View 1: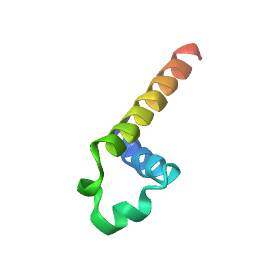
View 2: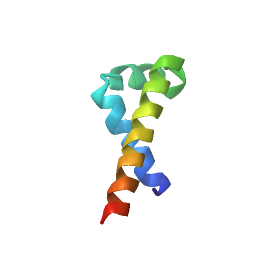
View 3: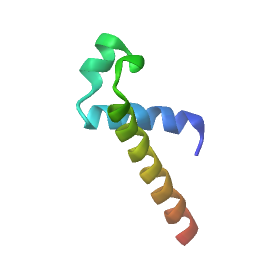
Length: 57
């Protein structure tokens, strides 16, 4: 998956988790390890699903 897609996915997931206000206030570095872990985990799941879908086609 291109880096560009992961970047946009990161923002999309942060928005889903309700973290965009915090990110706007303190930036990505202000997130807790738990919050960044949730974002990373969801990115991993989405990438895995995309690979599986591509493989199945």
